[in-house]
Structures are given as C-alpha cells and as structure tokens.
Image 1 (tube, rainbow, N blue to C red):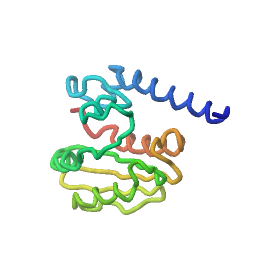
Image 2 (image 1 turned 120 degrees about the vertical axis):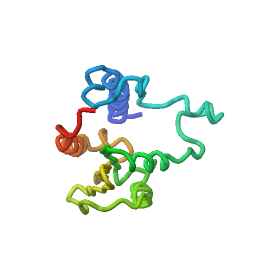
Image 3 (image 1 turned 30 degrees about the vertical axis):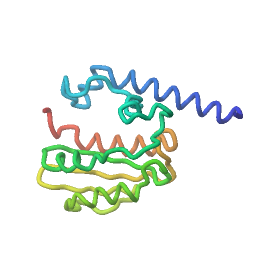
Length: 165
C-alpha cells in the first residue's frame, strides 16, 4: 500500500470510529429527533448481518439482502421527512437503482431535479428528498465532503422548525 492509500485508509477508519461515538451521543440523538428506545446503539457497519445469513466469510455482502422497499412504503403513509443520498459513482448501490425504487413508490414530484441532482417527492404529509452527488462513490462524505455537507445542511435547515415530535 502506498502512503497516499495508507493515509486514505486511516481517514476512513477514523470517520467510521468517530461516527459511532458521535451518533450515540444523547445530544446528537435529541437534535436528530430520534425517540428514546427506537434505536439501541448506532453502528456504522452492521457486522451481525453476515452471521444472520450464515456468511461469516466477509464483512462485505456476498449474498442478496432483503429489500427495504416495504419500509419506505410504510414511511410514505406517515408524517415525516426523508433524505436519500447517492454518489453517482456508487457501485454498491447505484443511483439508477435508487431512482427506480423511489419511482416505484409513485409519489408526486414536488420539485424537479435541481443543480445538485436533487428531486423532492411528496404524498400527503410525507416528503422524500433524493440527492445524487456527482463524482462520489459509496461513502459520499469521504469522496465529496463539502458537497455532502451542503446537501445535508440544506435539508436540515429546511426542517428546523417543522416538528418537535
């Protein structure tokens, strides 16, 4: 491994470790409106899923996982706001597949694609913003940290006073 790839690996490992610490802080959970008892412990990587499927060989998916589409269909009946972000170079979850399952929800398009490849969908009191970050791979915050921060900050700012529940 050359020194550049070693440095990148150190940065990635730090981000994953520190994100676990940050996401499990009570103040962060309160700021994100995560109700107590709904999420036990945040983990950046779910290492237990491979054992669940009898695949102790790797931390990477070597099998098909179940679809989460039913969860998004349930969310579409609730009063909530969702943000889905993809990198357009993400080979783990390609953005065309994400667009496809979002389209399958048959939500009304509230605002068409914006310069950052953002599109907003809505149904009753459900709003879903989908953003694609150009040039980003699977870990968008590592590939395009500034762009990722802009998308997340804009989304959070648009919901500052939307709900206290």
